[in-house]
Image (cartoon, rainbow, N blue to C red; front, side, top):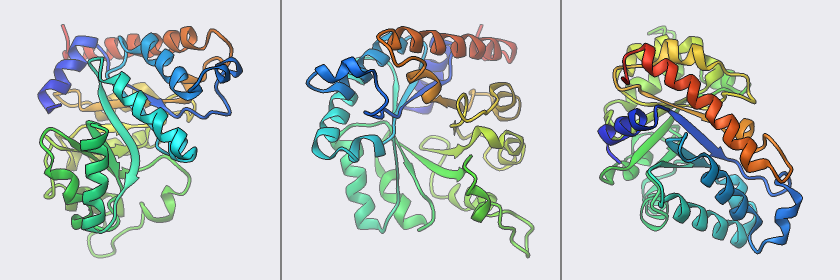
Length: 276
């Protein structure tokens, strides 16, 4: 999916919502265990009930890989089901290794599974990221500033010579690796006040914003500081939508939560003249 196609999808659905499929088998409704593949059935119902309000879905690979072969089958079926709809697909895999290893990760997620994007850790530098950038109309989503407590261990370390924080150096350095047409950045919603500084560097890039909902991030603040002329935001909610209920009405409750966020996003897009 190209950047222009992504923006058109945002305008069409009047939404910049991403739903995280952090599908923990221990938390899904118990009755689904009667199905041959409980996790896929859970994902399928969530997707079917929310896809008109979401522009993207983001399976977190830990919840699939931890289940071995069965989990991988659930993931494959989930991505195949997502391909039936007009949505952007993100592998939340946080890969990043030496070049030949990254090349195989890229092949797995872009060729075999046909995801549109993958999250990548920047710590090992350009040669660990560049194999993912060779694929046409596919995206790297580079970890820039995360919302966990441990973000302060390294990401805010200040360069004594320049005064820049480490996450700002990541943004500046990586901008020459890719472009706004194939690279996005992860910025945690609980770091919304830092978005102004991030936008001074990454003006045109899309930002994937996790942390709305269960983690306490503010959609209003994220939009105030993070919007650009092509929207430039993909805002993720995971637990707040998919685990809104653990009963048989889980899909309907997920739909209600997704609709609530979509309606907020429509207002934001309208006020900022990004949709008519």
